[in-house]
Image 1 (cartoon, rainbow, N blue to C red):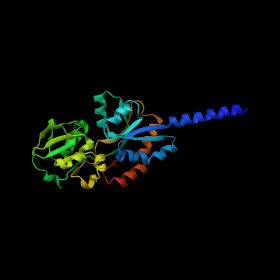
Image 2 (cartoon, one colour):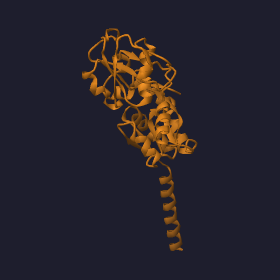
Image 3 (cartoon, rainbow, N blue to C red):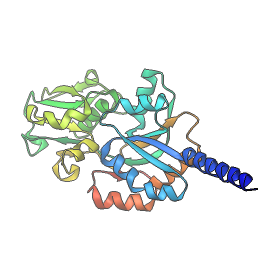
Image 4 (cartoon, rainbow, N blue to C red):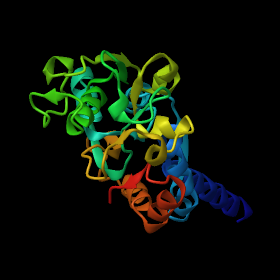
Length: 260
């Protein structure tokens, strides 16, 4: 009888261990604001039976490769145009599970205080990836700095510029490095998360800033077919909560805007 009880007890421990393991959700994220928001909801998810593990990355390439290879269950660092372009170019089957926030792209400078003071033949650093590079050029088009042949094309390049009255030069730089090149250029168009990490207030320090209507909402990305999984839906619900919305409003001063 004792042996039978011990056997049942051991089986129970195995079952509990298997359940805990099944509830682990590994999500890749860049530090600000993505990892911060994930850590904010970690305890809430635990009460829902989800053990959230946040894996931090500092680039825009590795998190999607890790997701495609099954090293992650999801990632949280990018907007949909970037995911779409990256997945098509690499032959990856990744999709969006839902939107969380927008990080307005901004123009920053250490050399001028007003965009009107941008000198002729100035060099502007822009993100080197196609979706964010196009996004930077669209921001400049929308503010009358340049004119594009089709500003609705999210993947425009320098070759799509039809008017450039100041004869500006554009220097593609890996997005994470843009704050570091500010001393070497007249201005740089920097993604909101990297601007925040560099200590900038996008609202107060930028010369130009995207509006909240930006189509570049940051998303939870997963492998195709995983978007309806229970743990992913719990994660999305936690991130689309009033708690997260209030935290964004209190901590990022317009540098992050809820998209739900």
